[in-house]
Amino acid sequence: MRSVFNLGLLLSVTIALAAPAVSFAQHAADVQKLSADGEHFKALAMYELLPSKKLVMETRVAAAKSAWALGLNRQAADGFDSILRDPNIAPDIRTRLVLSRGVIEYQEERYQEAALYAEKAISYMLESVPLRGRAYLLWGQSLLRTGAYASAHEKFEKALSDVQPQDRAEAQFALGLVQIKLARYEDAQKNLEAIPMDHDRTPVAVRMLAGLSLETRQYDRAKFWIEKGKTDYPEAFVDSWGDYGLVQAALSRGDFEEARRVTDSAQKQFPPSDSWLVLMQASLELAEWKKREQVSVG
Image (cartoon, rainbow, N blue to C red):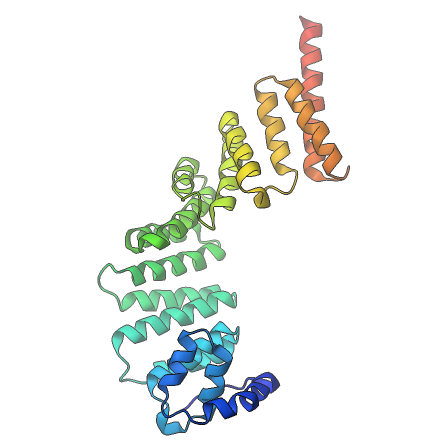
């Protein structure tokens, strides 16, 4: 049974505009080509114009993917569900569509449902393959969102064993994140440091490494990561947190002059009510008071 995509007025207008161009289409392969080329509105418009007898499974999959690409998650889910009800669907296609359904549920913040779809997709894959790595990654991310950190950690470790090289950094980032939640700081540090410097996750990973170093009182390492972040990934260090970390690092080695310099610079950039600015000022004042007390006692 054909699943009709109700795209509202916007798609109606698109169909009207596209009709002269698509009316001469001879077969449904054009829908697949348009979808693959990123012409998603045109793909859906052509899909609506095709007679039912031309709606082979590949065409329906392409239409569902185009709806998904346009942010029409409910329509995409309905399309995938309709295809999955076909008992004759090939096992590899079924696996990919089940995993896609899980991703949609995750995007809709239905994390328990997403985990169930990921688990179901994995049940179809008996061997280690990259797709299974992605399914484990989705499963772990869903569990992480529900606070099941130990279970998420297990899934991320399995994902790391299966994923393709291009997905490895994402798995390492996820594993590092959940290891921080579990207070496994040394393991988290190793995974975050393994992420390539040009990866999309790197700016956040560098900030996390700086935070880990502060948490574990490795102040020289914290200074290194904060300075690197401010220089190479300024978009991740636009607030005053980095300055706060630099003040803590300076005070740890008794460098009051550096701590004052960083605090004075931060005072010129951030409002007096800024929480990290208030904390660095308080830290500096407390350290100076302790120093005076020591001198007085001495």
